[in-house]
Length: 305
Image 1 (cartoon, rainbow, N blue to C red):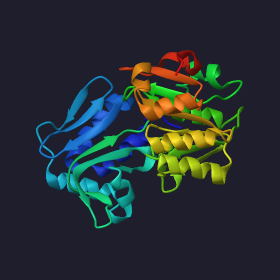
Image 2 (tube, rainbow, N blue to C red):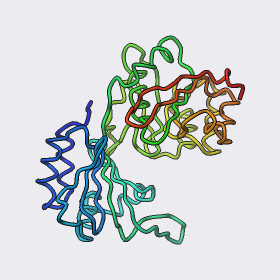
Image 3 (cartoon, rainbow, N blue to C red):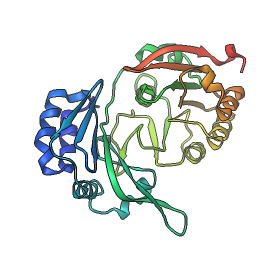
């Protein structure tokens, strides 16, 4: 659907203070899909984070508290209350699948629900799809039969981007597998007002905003999936849910933060998952500037977990 679509990028400008719009527009024209984030911090100049460098936006003018407040209100469509669930997770999803990370002071109500006050910085994370980024591994993993697969790598190595492309391929021609994406952090499908902003394929259903364990179980109960795809699996509840559905004959494709097998096996919930047979293969990504690039593909059984 898009690789940092120019129209989507320009729509981001509508949320920014007027004095930043022209400079930010020129920067987007110049660097386009290299732009990964736009950060606004109180008392600091706004800055765009590119693939291998940064560019200040009006470096001579620091962002004020009123700039942050007005941008935050626009991001919330002037209704902070209607975004409380997203805010409790620290972000808001925009049209086009872009996400704004919200930094401030945590506040809790009498029921223990968390929200944010005294917003001090905003991180606009630019959504982008790299269609075809899974080509190097797809045929070897999924062309004949599907197997439980774990995508492992350090932060920003392209795990989520890879999962998006795998979901799209499996739920589209010629495969047409029934795929459910459990999108707890709303990064895989980037649903905005019920509509996925990322390409997910004709045979894909999306459970957006569900806690992973709950979403995985709910998918089995209501959507009869052949494959469940989710991002950043890791805690005990996630592991138990995965084991339950794998025993029901459903394949899981997920990701985890780990640079190598040693890091992976030190995490007890992941080690339990690997012992259970939920995952047959692990794809390790290179990381660094080599986003979505596989470093190695290993068979879990060969490592004697």
